[in-house]
Image (cartoon, rainbow, N blue to C red):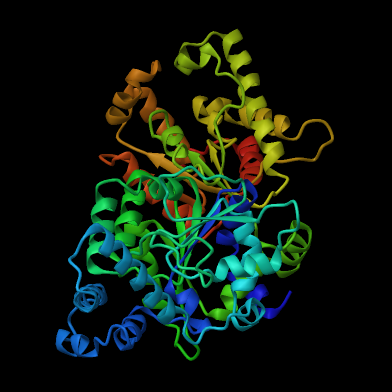
Length: 543
């Protein structure tokens, strides 16, 4: 492992752990933009427009010079196309019909093709060796369900063929699509070009249209607002994506990201802010950008240069064995545990449901017992003993999984200490001992797995109103008592994040919890030590 990989493993370990789990699940994907193609001499949008204007069949440089600097590139493209179409019709002495329009559109695509590939090597090996990081990401693309590529070119396809050539009797390792309405034919990696596809070899079935002019760009934006990009929204909602080579100045992209963030407040993506050689790092600026993108678009912003993007690709394809060995030697954590705690009605279970891209653990691993619907104080002695044993077994099962320290971000409904809040102060030592014994059965030596505790609290009357329709008999007085006891249980440490949910919507609560899980400092609460302390001293009156 080189120094860049080690640095990233140390500085981005939490996000790396999240991405690794999503890759393993087949729920990870790339979204690529124009910045990815620049190292191979592909033109940016402005350069492409200038090349088209200079094309001998267009001769529209005077059109650009008269357009002014404030005109968008899409508007300039629209003007050049209309100029070309008029000249073409005059030359052939035709009227504009559907037939002549199709012919002109085909010729126009060839002009764009010529301008697009001008100065770009036709040798896939040279493309692979010249690009600073794409080759490291090809294995990730092959493991992804779908890669969204906003570029027209077929560089990714060429590099995949180079890496995974199709043999006689086999099919390609990918399928190229540009119409998301159509069903995908293969189980191979899907390469989706929402702006259109223009391969170097035009026999490779280019798309019928390109989103390049003001008209087509406006149509795409209108369609996205009308919900016609439902398949892309669906992809963003079910897949953790990393955006590379894209600018958030694109209104269509911003709209899609914002729509996805509103629909799925607990689902986050990664955005690479490209750093050029010599760029100075400003911690305050980076924090501001990261916070803004996080709040508005559910994006975690990574500030990376070419070498670091390549290193990230290598880390994401490294086998678990070497990765875990290296992380242990570096002291880089790859297993993060978060516990959602709080009284009845605080929204723990509802909030947990929004974090499907993480490893989540419900409060109970078995079917909920009917006795749990009764207030704790209304249970008989026999019922309490049964419920105590049943609950302790649930935490033991979950704790056994957590202590394996599997890679990923683990979010759990309730901590093993939560059952203590249902007991009177005099009963706390015995209850703590009871729970500790269940978590370390026999001579196992196991103990409660530590983790960051997120304590959800609220106004008792409001929390009571939330649980009325969920078949729970929990008056506000009982909720207030439980909440106070939980605050006492977790009062002696700074490793507890308190979220007051009073007056907040579920998306607002999810957003606050998301920030704690993904951005805030990770400082695990030592649950095992706290159990020992409670067993020995109980809850003191000062807590």
